Length: 448
Image (tube, rainbow, N blue to C red; front, side):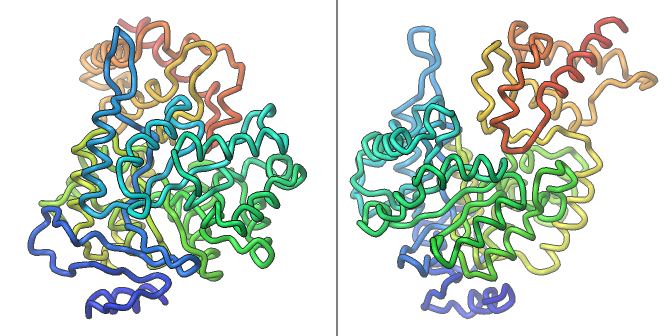
């Protein structure tokens, strides 16, 4: 089904659900407050699952102070999961490496309080480290995921973040027989859907898709948003434009799970000019809502994941999609061409705060450093020599830097060990950018 037919079917409120259509959708948009019972559901034709178009990414979870330490706020996580399920969210995505290795455990605690048939849980074989890549270690990680999640089957199992190289893909999943083992687990019913998540080289993506006739991928997870649709390759030569990824999966009728619809929050924290562009079109909607409606407007999308740290993040996402009205062709063009092109004029660092680079062995707060730098760029407050407000901007940058990133965790402590680069899905040359930011800071300190 193409997008035009998809929207037409939405408009007539069809009760049937095709491979890429929506159920439970209220097409009226007279009230943008979240309405229970209107969460759009997508049918996975491979399994018959009816999946909420909003998925809960269990990576950027709420924290609290306990005995002077930062710990995960299990009570708040439970409340957010309860609210999500109450409004129809039924897809929860985690991994053994998320949230300092604790995401599966806290997710399992929260979900186990609900009937097993009321949710789908997705996790990943995150065997990035060499000591986890043997067949035995990988299988142990898989079984430990079920233990931590308190389940006896996995609804959606992914080969985690393929794409860095063909050698890496073969070493982690092919040569050790792990993919064959997971296929057998699917046949035994302990895995209900088998897929992979992709970041990186097109060669690996194409090779994985070429295996579809024998593996029969039930779904694939890609990074897709209105900036990456046409510009991912411009941001980094290692990245693949989302329009290519989507089209290749659509040709094969493979359901798509979306990660980073907000690019780690970058598409919700835009500069004032882009903010005004979006508000002029939809003054009552949040900036973030554009990104979620963009993803949900493509019929092959099964669900779009959101890492929601605060209840207000969840509530805003629910308002964006309950009820859901797909974007028009003109609105899609507006985002893909006008808004995305304008965003490319601002040289922000493409960090999504996924935390894969953390912890840094030398204590750097890599995402925090990038977040402060990017915020100053987006706000048009990056100090430049010759600017009449230079002194004010310089002082604000340095004070803000010290407040947002502790001195011992700032860019000047980078020793170029390059461990972080092996884990960055955005292919950022992190040590190079750290030294650029450190040089910039030192120049600001000298030019008092």
